[in-house]
Image 1 (tube, rainbow over the protein chains, first blue to last red):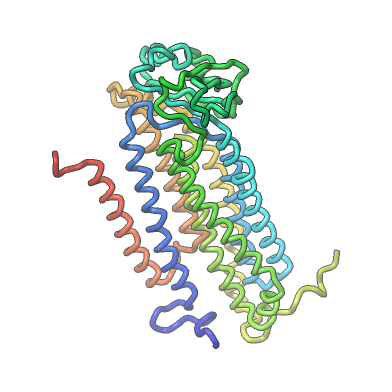
Image 2 (cartoon, rainbow over the protein chains, first blue to last red):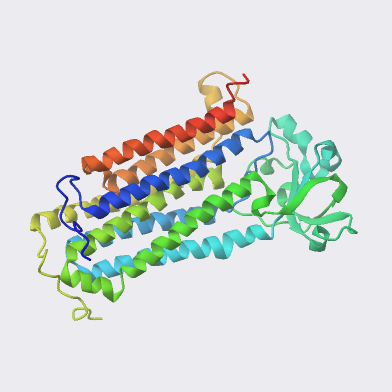
Length: 291
Length: 132
């Protein structure tokens, strides 16, 4: 079957068919991500003082990934421009760089950022017991400075069996710097560089804990929305990479030989999708990493 | 490395391209590079601004005393403004929305309407006007 209007514009719509198709698809994507973002807004507005974590993600790594996506957005549009100018070798080079960027983004996300969270532990202290852990929380100091209170003690869990064994009555946590030295003014606001947990061990009794878990989706509204939105975004990056790989296969070279404008239009449409994925990340990055 | 024999010659159906169109694209390449550099620069600006206490700055500017929570909201507002500017650049230049056909704009008018409606529903749920 021959798909009509792949190159020439339809007279009634004024555009070639794939362009209408991709924009309708992107419109539905806006609603998909819009639903998740509005859930994020709702959960965040509803969080009480001190309930929404700040500074738990690695900012330099997030910045690096943002730059990678922006660079790939430039290379994909350059790939399309090269095709328009009938520079096939150049097109293939730009496309390869775009794919490489997508893969690097995914490797950083799935190979580094997410796994770091799986092993980071947080114990949320019951409201009534907060004073007992003042030496880790420093809430008197925060109150004097006009900051929201801390309610969670975080770090690396030294006795992971405590999560499952009811006979173990306390968590031993290699404390994050913020809990090791809570009254230090430098800990009032999030750091730019990631600071690993200290050697200092904090003891938290299970009876005083409202809930305790690794930084997994069930840990909090913050991590639930973080994993959902970055996960769906990552799935989009993967889909884009697969489509771009197809654009480098012999089938695409054959298409170029037969009808280069058709291939250029395919690349344009795939590029529109890729720019949209970049656009989503432009909002994800500050919302989760910085604010 | 010589790639010349790997490079297929473009087909005859549409090629050679309208020389005017190819020139048009060539003129845009510079724009794409500039926009890419601007986006990278604004990424650095976004990160830097997140370490600025806008609550403090706005308190001075408007002679009020914003709480820490209000200050955070000021930072969110600033960051979202910068993000909207970056997103606008991507949409206008990379996605060619600065000069697109009318049908595409019409699709997007509907999208904007419905996504604003979606956020409005969220706002209603949070504000809870019936009980108030």
